[in-house]
Structure formats: structure tokens, C-alpha cells
Amino acid sequence: GTGKFADRQEYPLPYLVVLDLKLPILMGLEVLKWLRQRPEFDPVVVLVLTSSANPADVDEAYRLKANAYLVKPSGMDNLVRLVESIRDFWLVHNQPARVFSDPLA
Image 1 (spheres, helix red, strand yellow):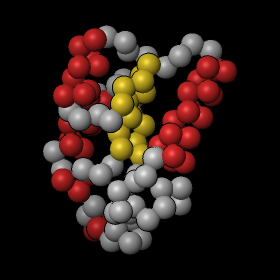
Image 2: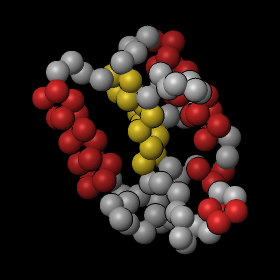
Image 3: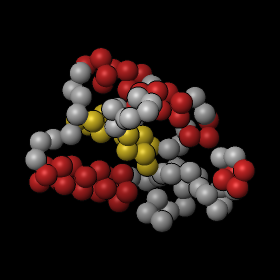
Image 4: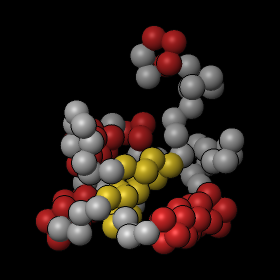
């Protein structure tokens, strides 16, 4: 949000972030912690979508205020169904905070 990206009319914050825990440079839980330490990201929905079913990861993600923790299913068909469910719930049926005019835009 600095420089030209400070203009939130032209560069709005995302409505929905899908976050993996296993990222190449910074671990997903560190990204989640960073996001949740900044009040401007409070209304942003953060879904953890990862291969880890480790209870410690689940607990830590929710402690850091993830909106949901989803374990990647096996098989492409199952993954497609999960992604469709995410789309339907968060982008079709859910009512976003008023700071987001149109989450599909």
C-alpha cells in the first residue's frame, strides 16, 4: 500500500485471500500473522488451503484469525468441488463487509 499502490480506489485490497502454509520464501502462518497485525486487512477473508492436517497448524491458523482452515483433498475432481464450494460460499452467498463494493469485480 505504498507509492502508487496507496490509492485504494485504483488498487483495492482483496476481498478473499487463499493462503497455503508451505510457501517458498515466507511460511503461510507468517503471512497470516502479518496480515492480521494490520487493521486495514481486518475485513479481508483469509482461507488457509493446505496439505497439512497437523492439529498444531490448524490451531495456530485460527489463533491468528484465519476465517477457515481447509485441507486440500486428493484428486483433481475433489479439489475442483472444494474450490467451487469456496466460490459459492464466500463469493456468492456470503455478504461481504461494506468496504467491499463487489467481491467478484
